[in-house]
Amino acid sequence: MIVASAIIDEIFEVYVDCYEDDSYIDYTIVQKNRKKIKIIIDSIYEQSIENVTGQKPRNHLDARARINKLIKSDEAEYLDFLKTLDEVLSHYDVLSDKRYIDHSKDMESLLEGPLNRLCNQLCALEHYASMPSARALRSLLGRLK
Image (cartoon, rainbow, N blue to C red; front, side, top):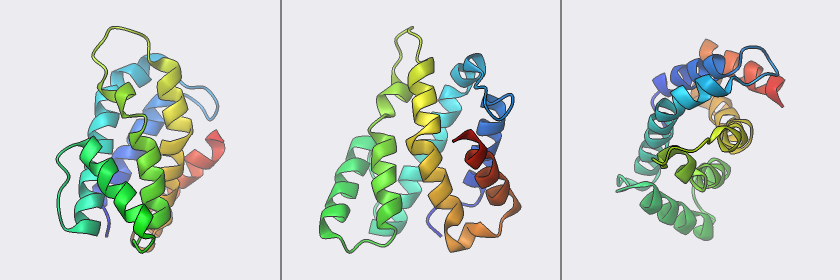
């Protein structure tokens, strides 16, 4: 298991909150959920890196460095997942930026792009595939494409 199963439930709740229907993103709710999304991504990268390497990363930059080392070795388990996680972490500044500016479009890009792909890959992993929340999340993400 690469991350705790409860992460799937948390991700599903965020996506349900952020999308009023299958095609409309509610930017106000996305902004309110930005901190929760950051916490979820923090949990995913911390648990994933620790489970793959045996060591917990110090921060998202350390996680990216470890991921890049694993990608270069081309021997890592979950290689596609780690590549997508690296792409998600490349957008990390959107989550951690404390300036009072509108991040709506950047958040939409993250939710509908790399985070969507990462969640799909996570839900497809053997341990999670049979979970009702994973199936519901994959169904929801599929409608957002």
